[in-house]
Amino acid sequence: MSGRCSGGIVLSLPRDYKGLEDRALELAGELSSIPSGERVLVVSHLDADGISSGSIIAAALIRAGASPHVRIVKQLDEGALKEVSQVKAKYIVFTDMGSGQRDLLKGFGSEDTKLFIVDHHQLPSVELAFPQKENSSAGRLFELNPHIFGFDGSSELSASGTAFLVAKKMSSENSSLAPLAVVGALGDMQDKGEQGSLIGLNASIAEEAQKRGQLTMKKGLKLYGFESRPLVKCLEYTLNPFLPGLSGDEGACFKFLKNIGIEPRKPDGSWRSISDLSPEELRTVTNGLIKYLISQGAQGRDAESVIGVVYTINSEGADSPLRDAREYASSINACGRLGRHGLGVALCLGDRAEALAELRELLSEYRRTISGYLRWLEGSKESIKIMRSVQAILAGNNIDDRMIGTIVSIAFSMKPFTRSKPILGLATSEGAVKISARGTQELVRRGLNLGAAVRDASERVGGAGGGHNIAAGGQIPVGKEDEFLSIVDAIVERMIGGVRL
Ligand code: C5P
Ligand code: C5P
Image (cartoon, rainbow, N blue to C red; front, side, top):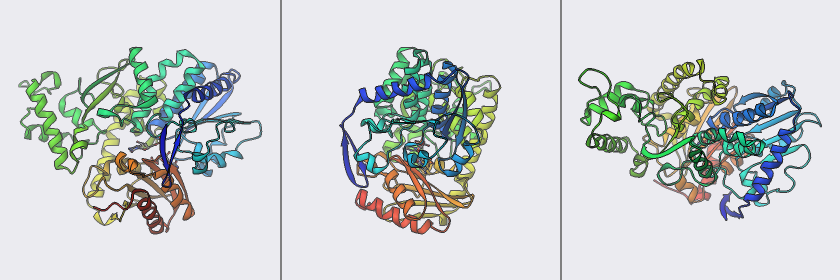
C-alpha cells in the first residue's frame, strides 16, 4: 500500500504494477503504430528529468520510424500551448507534465489530434482519492502516470523512468536508454533511499542497467568525477550535493584542501587525484568535507550525505561530464535552465562530438551563474522572509525565474535557512511571479504536500500551481506575493502542525 497525503488527508492506494505495465503497453502500441515519417511533437519540461524523459520518447520514436520534434517549455500553461500549437502535428506527447493540466489539454489540438501524457506529477486532488484508471486513457488522450497505479511519482519513478517503461514496450532495443532513466531520477533528486540510493521502480531500472553492464553502482564520495579528475576539480565541479563556498570556486577548493592538510599538487606541480592519495589522506578528505559542511550550517546527516551510492555510466569517457549520472543530470539541467534546450536533447540523443565541448563551456557558465545568485542572496537578507511555517526568498528580478528552483534547493544548506520549514522562492518575470517550493523528506513524512499547498494557494490568488509533495511550483499575479505567502503558511501549518524554530 502507498500512503500519500492530499491537503492533510492521508490516502492509501493499492499498488497495481500489472495496471502500470498494461497502460505502458497501450501507449507503446499507439506510439509504435504512428505511420513512418509522421511528425510527432514531444513537449517537455526544462529540467533534467524533463529533457531526459522527452529525449527517451524521441529516441524510441526515431527507432520506430517517426519524426519527433522536441519542444522544451518552462511550464505547461496557455502561453506554452499557444507556442507549441505552431508546430503542426497529429500526435503530441507531453512528458514530465500534463497530468496536472488535463483540463487545459482537453480542448487542445483538433479532434483527430492524439494526445499522450507521460508524467509522474501528482494528480489533482479529486483524482488522488478516485484515480481514473479506466477512463484516463479514453478517447484521444492516453496517459501514463505512476500515481494512477498507486506508485509515488515523487520518489519511486521519475518522468524519465515512466517514459522508459513505454520505450521498452515499444522495442526491447530501447533498454539502451536505461541510463537516461537513472539520470532523470537523480536530476529530480529521487535518490532518497539508504546512502543516497534510488528506490522503488527507479531502483529496479538501475539494477537492470547494472546487470546489462550499462551502469556501475558503488558507494563512495559523491564528488563529480572522483575517480578520474584532480581533487580540486572534483570539489569545484560538484553541484549535487551542493558544497557551499566550494562548488564553482577553484581557489576556495584549493585552500580547503590545504587547510585540512592535503597537498593539492604533486611535487612536479601537476594536480593530485584520488589514486595519488593514501587511505589515510582519503579519510582526511572525507572527514574534512563533512566537518566543513557542518560549519556551513548543514546538519550531521545531510553533511554525511556526501558519501553514498555513485552511479557511473560505463559507456561515457573517463573525463566526460556525462560519466557520473549525477553530473549528467546537472549538465542537462544547465542546458535547460540556461536556455540551451537543443544542446540538452542532443546530448541525451547521443551527440558526443561538438556537443561535449559546448557543454563544458556551458557548465562553467552555470556554476558562475549559481555562485552569482548565491552571493546576491547572502547580501540580501532583507529579501528573506521567515514565517511561522514556511521560509521565503523574495527574489524579484534578481534571480532568473528558470534558476529560482535551483537556488531554493541549495538554500537548504545555507544560513539562515532551516530544514524544519519548506522554502519558497518568488521570482518576477514577464509580468508574473514564478514560485518554486522545496521541502524535505522529514517534512513530507510529517504530512507536507507542497504540490497541494502551492496549487491551492496559487489558485486562491488567481494563479496556478502543482507538483510533488516534496517539490512544487506555480505562477501568481504580481502584487499577490504577500497574500499568497500568508495562505501557503496557513496551509503548511495545518499540514505539519505548526513547526517553530
Ligand atoms: O518537473 P519535475 O518533477 O521534473 O521537477 C521536480 C523538481 O524538483 C526538479 O527540478 C528537482 O530537482 C526538484 N527537487 C528538489 N528537491 C527535492 C526533490 C525535487 O529540488 N527533494
Ligand atoms: O519550476 P520548479 O522546478 O520549481 O517546479 C517544481 C515542480 O513543480 C516540478 O515538478 C514542476 O513540474 C512542478 N510544477 C507544476 N505546476 C506548475 C509549476 C511547477 O506542477 N505550475
